[in-house]
Image (cartoon, rainbow, N blue to C red; front, top):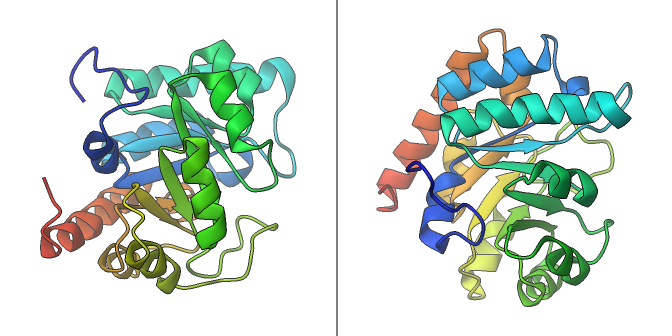
Length: 232
């Protein structure tokens, strides 16, 4: 993104482009220090970042805020959108670029009112949820779980790439990122099915070579987008 580009309510095609390699991270998801992991992932080529501090041993209070603030600093430096999972207060205090919510969080309509024109991502699992999220003002959908995943313990049943295909066939043109169990080996199938990008945690955060894993994932995604005529 260009210096000074307004991330909030960005043009849909610009957002679609930014979502190619969407990295999610919190301190429970790493073997290494989380800021180091993020910096290596940025160097490898991630294009979007979500701060998700959840799970056993997750930070709270001032420690959580400090970690988010430091991660946001490096995202800003790299001109990568920085969004917060679920925590509206934290997102507003940090002046984050947006927030991502699930179906179990506060209603998307309420979140949209609170965050104004910041980016709103919503996890959806079927046509009904997608229609409701779109009507509430979602900017993109996180769709899945596509493949089995051990990172999130509260996920819905695995759906495969067909859920992405179903959304596209039913006229949803909002940017979509596939979520759940995605690796460099299967990322191309998710893009082939109609997604604009892939969202990962452990495929990067637990890799022995974090920078290399991020770079490989980006190459696989961009090769698949090029094959679809969607690389720009």
